[in-house]
Amino acid sequence: MKKIFLFIIIYLFTSNINAENSDDIKRIIVGNKDAKINIIAYESLTCSHCADFHIKIYPKLKKDYIDTGIVKIEFRHFPLDLAALNASKFSQCKNDGRSEILNSLYLNQSKWVKGETVGEVNKNLKNFLKSQGFGLDFDKCTTDKNIENFVLNDRIEGVKKFKVNATPTIIINNKKFEKSLNYKNLKKSLEKLI
Image 1: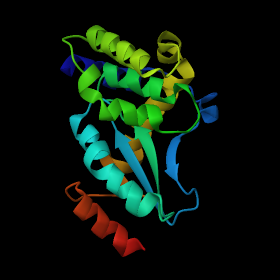
Image 2 (image 1 turned 120 degrees about the horizontal axis):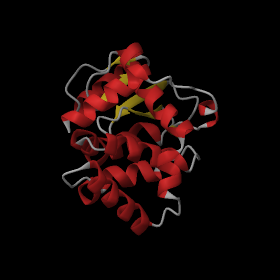
Image 3 (image 1 turned 30 degrees about the vertical axis):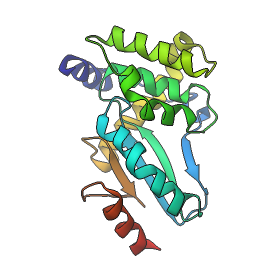
Image 4 (image 1 turned 180 degrees about the vertical axis):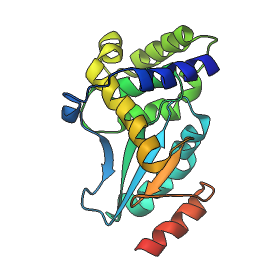
């Protein structure tokens, strides 16, 4: 996996990422667009801590703050390896701004994040997505350069703007959440902003 991470770093700094048409890609956002509190979650789809966030923290956050209109959350991509990059591209491929594919990937991470090589993980990912009936062309989604640029630009922005260096990283109203990420700490921070 270290080789994969190194590849992404080299790719980020040597490729000419073109944002053309990536403005047409809808960001995955849940909640009231005019909410008082905006959370940005930088995540990698192969990150077990990110999956824990979606399983243990996000449902409470959604029930208590998002569904009530107080908070909106924007999911941003910060792929830590090539398998996460491909999964991120697939999560954006439907381009409807909805979180169903993203949530399914996190909630079922153990079903597809396995294998010794990126190729094996990709095969597991493809089989998992097919079994879930999302109805998208895996190869078309994972080779779409506009989506790839969109995903990689999220990562670049996270590093430059918020100094993101791990996942998940939570940003609340443009300030990095520095406490241990659990619901109790998150709730305390949100309550101070209401």
